[in-house]
Image 1: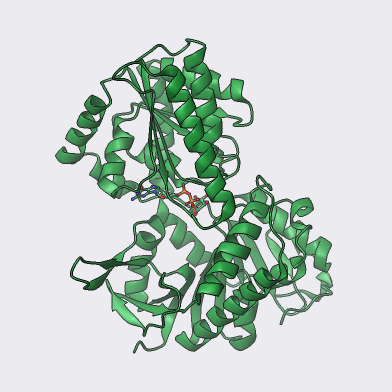
Image 2: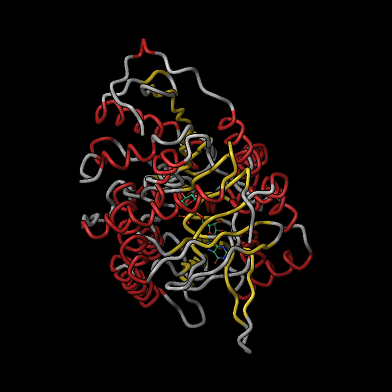
Length: 477
Ligand code: GDG
């Protein structure tokens, strides 16, 4: 049994995956990802705990220790996974917050289950936190938790970070449960967003929906102040930078190029197979360049890694079929014996293999229709101390705010994507080095450690006192 903690992370998933051996023995492995790496040292220093679902439905587990972290599993039934996770989180909120690039589903049972599961997370957090603890709630699956938790434990310092974009008021307004969601978030002391634009959307929404005033970053409720601020997330620059200097990663990168037939240009895409990522748009652009003969036979190979994701949600099943049909068509029309222009993989890879792929790629294609940040863009930059490589980046990725020296594109404009792909392929080494150097400086300085520590410092710094002169008409609780 784990005691109460002074620092608590509350997230949909625990930071571990269960690994079952052939003989049936099971063990836990830390899941890959910057969030865990950034937070693990803080966890160890503060005897922190992480609360989240462990990934198997209809199973209750006792709290356990792993890698110096206390892990508190929150159970979910199969129906809850369907309605709260696949339903309200991934079929309602995800498309709504990503500019409605797919139609959101509004169904009451999904909402009711979302609320019930959020309540369970809030109750578990209230039990696990010691007096005056700092609690950091993560992402769109748990937006009601801050207010629910504050009601149970007004002594806590509560932070919330949204990893995906916060939409403009006009889009958010469609949500039948808009008021409950906004009130849920306002239960936090600090609400963090990827970009200043998301924070501004949220403040405007609060004023229009609840009539609460704001000034600068602060929203003034009757009894307290909520700070809203941008904290652009980043990657573990140091880890990637040293990984690509390891001899086995360097030789693997060379091997990858050889296995691809040693083309002049290796183009790469790495994404969860998600309709927000603009995979179809970049395939279309590449296909047209081949068809028009602007990329010659054997001149370029485009490797697309599409990691399996949310496979039980209808929209994702359709997307997989569409992408695979498109890859088949383009390859069918443009392949020559022994050379397929698109190499498509619906698989997951280890960290080292991914680093080798980044290192091997001359052009990285990151073309989402909307993305909170996009870590792949920052990972690619972290892997190029050789100052080689071009990043083609969508203006609609949060990362575009920082990586201004990339080859920026509007993914809705296929001619623009084609033009920038070619410009990236034809750029001189000097030009590439100039761009890459500036981007690397940015990612090296604002890495994921800095992201976590800036958020936590802001969370632990009390905001201005609630001033009655701001005349808030809405009271939290
Ligand atoms: C959400 C927001 C925001 C991918 N395939 C493999 C693999 N990956 C890793 C990448 C990268 C991560 O997954 C994907 O991160 P992204 O940021 O690109 O996208 P989302 O999953 O949509 O993340 C996003 C992020 O949260 C953080 O706040 O940036 O905007 O949507 O790290 O490398 N990793 C391994 N094998 C794979 O096959 N090991």
